[in-house]
Image 1 (cartoon, rainbow, N blue to C red):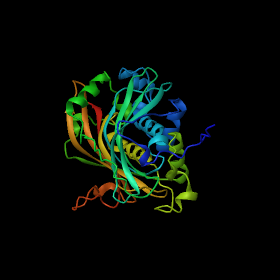
Image 2 (cartoon, rainbow, N blue to C red; image 1 turned 120 degrees about the vertical axis):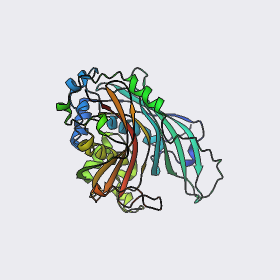
Image 3 (tube, rainbow, N blue to C red; image 1 turned 180 degrees about the vertical axis):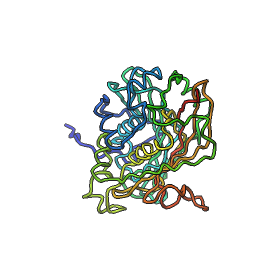
Image 4 (cartoon, rainbow, N blue to C red; image 1 turned 90 degrees about the vertical axis):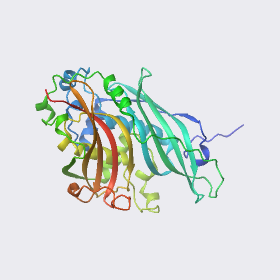
Length: 355
């Protein structure tokens, strides 16, 4: 009789193989309570995710959940199988928000291994995955790629064949426009009073930098609660008993928490960038810890016409630690991130045109 273990320690680098498909457990029915807790954690104020009546004026059936609540829940589904033994989430690419998700929708996720690279130290390797989330109608709502540095079971170089996927540095404008049009938004009746800003597509210029001014201090209890909201089980965010002996001597804040903080802060300057439809790429430039204060600034790096009432802004959002963002910190002359930069995220968002 085979004695099969009933618990799991997660996958290590050696457990992954090219073209492997992993169906993640625990589908999640998203509730109004999830959205309320998300708002409490981040103070997000974007009208689309706050008001059913505002959403209906844009021809949606009701207020959808926040884009990064969806992203973080979908990400959390993948953690037990992909990154439970990760040392770092290294980056994102080719992320597409393909359909609105409403309270009551059920999300499940699957990941495909698209790349592997063993590191020369013989202790870790990088795993590249394409993760896809669907709703209860089997419609794809989110599709993204990420790569993660993962521990090995045993030290030593095994000469695992390196397979590096071709990752686009950006989505094409045709792709972005197709996603935007698929939502069928009608912004004719966009309510600028309810949205909190009069700034429109025509008011933003390529190269413009926006200091979002406000800061938010990361609290230990809040970042752990947020990570549990997403059912992210990565040990580095929770277990001080082990992490006090780790690289940093303390728990690391989940990177998605920093993304959500920065997006919430960006309301002050980008209140009408109401819907994120794609992420070209992003990086967590440095770890974040409880006690740090996060500021944010954004740069407009491109613009695009969608239709008569809608435009799109390509935005680079930067999360800054323990320093106001008025100096627009990003990369130094050597091409490395400034020491205060926590996050750099390149995304497309929809915004109304002037009436």
